[in-house]
Image (cartoon, one colour):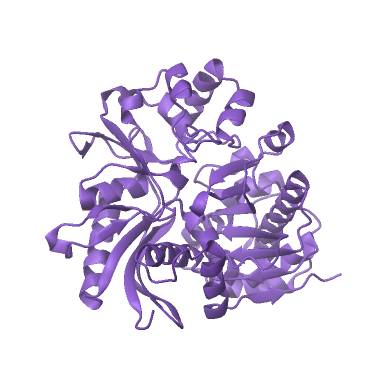
Length: 466
C-alpha cells in the first residue's frame, strides 16, 4: 500500500453522533471530523424515543459533506449503541424507535423470564441481565406482530442507504436472541417466547458489503463493520499484554477482556458479566457500568438550574484539587437509570442534600471516583472469572480525555492505565473497512490493526499511586 485511501465512518452514540473521514496509508491513520450533531432521548406521549428522522437527516447531510470534501471515499461503515431497533413494514418504520431507558421494558422482563428463566437464558445467549435488552423490549412491544422485519439502529440506516435489510453479527449478539456458541439466531428460543422469527433478518459479518448507496451519494459501497460501537472500539484498543483489560468509556463504561471463547458459568452470571460478539469471532467478555452519563446528566441539571453553561474542564480541574471523597455510591443503582434530576438522586444515595454551588467540585469528584471504583471492581472480577492476571487497563473513548477518571481508575485498580485513543470507535470502524478494501497485507489480523493504532496514536500512561 502506498497512497492513502479514504472511507467514511458514521459513529452514533447515545448522546451525540458524528460523520468522520478516515484516511489509511503506510504511515497514515487519520480521522477528519466532518459533522457532529446532538442525540438523546425525546419524550413523546407514550414514552421515551429516539428522534430517528432528525438523526437520519444528520447522517445523510454528513455523508454528503464527507463525499464533497473527499471524492475518493471508497466505502461507508456505520456503528451505534446496541439493543434498540426499528420495526418496518413495506420498508417503512411503523413508529419511532423507543429509547432503551423507557420504562416500558420492565413489562417484558417478567414475560420473558416466565417462559425462560434467566439462568437458562444466560446459558443460551451469554448476556448479563439488563432490563432493556432487545429480547425484553420485543416482549413488551405489541407492534412486533405487525412488522415484516426488525432492524437495529445501524442496520436501519444501512437499509435506508442501500435498500437491503440485514443484521450485523456483533450487534445481533446484544439482542439476547443469538446463540452464544453458534453465533446464529436461536430459533428454539424465539419460538418458545412466541416471537415472530420472520422479523429477524439475515446475519452478516464485519467486512461484508451490505450494498451500495444511491447515485445521489455517489454509489458508494456500505460495508458492515463492528456495528455495535464497543465492537468497533475494541478493534482499536492497542492491547499491550496478554493480561490487558479494556474500558471503552463514554455514556457507558464497557469493562472487560477479549477472549477466544465465551464464559457462561454460574459465577459469570452472578457477577453480571456478558459475552458479546467481537470482530473476527472474538468474544467481548465484559460488564456494563454506567459511565460518564452520570456526570453529563449532573452538569445538564446544573446548567438548567443556573441558566448558563458550565465549563466542564474547569470543573474537573477543581474536582482534582479537592480531597479524595470518603463516601462513594453505586453507579449501577436502579434509581440512576432514567433521565432526570441526577444531582438529587445521587445525593439521596449519599444520604445528603442536593449539592450547593460551592460543593459542586467535590460532588463531581465523588461521581468520577465512583465510576473509577466500578471500573476497577469490574476489571478485578473479569480477571478472576477468566483466570487472567490483569496487568494493565486500556481506557479508550471520550473518558480517555478525563485525566481525573484515568488516574482514579489506575489508583483504585492498582495497575497502570493507558489512555487513548479517544476516537477508538471511529478508528475501529475505519480499520475494518480498510481491511475489507484490501488496504493491508492479506490475512491482516486484529493484532496487526492494533499495532497501527499504537504507532499512530500512542496512549498516555497513568501509573497507580500508593
